[in-house]
Image 1 (cartoon, rainbow, N blue to C red):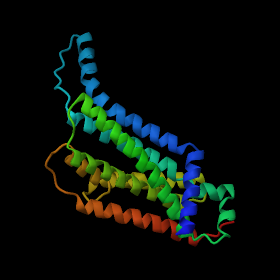
Image 2 (spheres, rainbow, N blue to C red; image 1 turned 30 degrees about the vertical axis):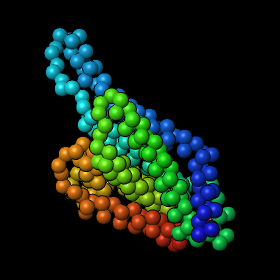
Image 3 (cartoon, rainbow, N blue to C red; image 1 turned 135 degrees about the vertical axis):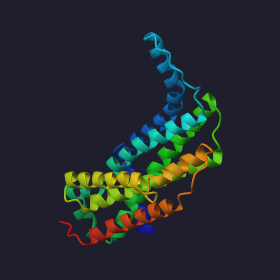
Image 4 (cartoon, rainbow, N blue to C red; image 1 turned 90 degrees about the horizontal axis):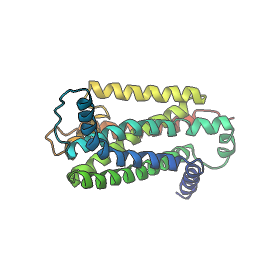
Length: 252
């Protein structure tokens, strides 16, 4: 446990020094703030454009649901890109820079190495998503009405679990890749598979964000327990697979 804490501290410090903390927090908070604002202003902008073209556009008054829709769209789209971009180079990058040869001769289990990287990224995205969600919730209250608190918390939790799954898959790509290019290509291939699967089956990880959205807007919809179990299992398998892949590699 002590070795893990030391390695986790090192990973968190590296995230801070490389300004990844700043990037993730600023992006997620910015879209948290802008989501209700977009929902509020978009109908007015469309109406004004129609007036300029002498076209009558009938648009319903935006509601809390529109703000939540915008939050889900922005957070999932930009969150997944951040998750992949911040993760796929973490292991292969150290191998390319020669840092791995300095780390592994010491008594550091490769499972601990991978878990520390995953935990550091989980803390980073947890912080960014939490602050972004708080910004979105407060701004939604100011511009509309408060969404159901329980449903909104569930939505944020499911988005977080979905992001963790993508981060774990990106770490696996980083462990399998022999270069930054190959690791990046493999990470985006994993991402593509997950996105395509979400449109084909209700057991894909992406379905848990749909479940969270349903709860957040107070709508009726089926619970996606199968997708939740698959998401958790895939995350664990990807992290375990990263450690296994490293154990089978000669670091030189």
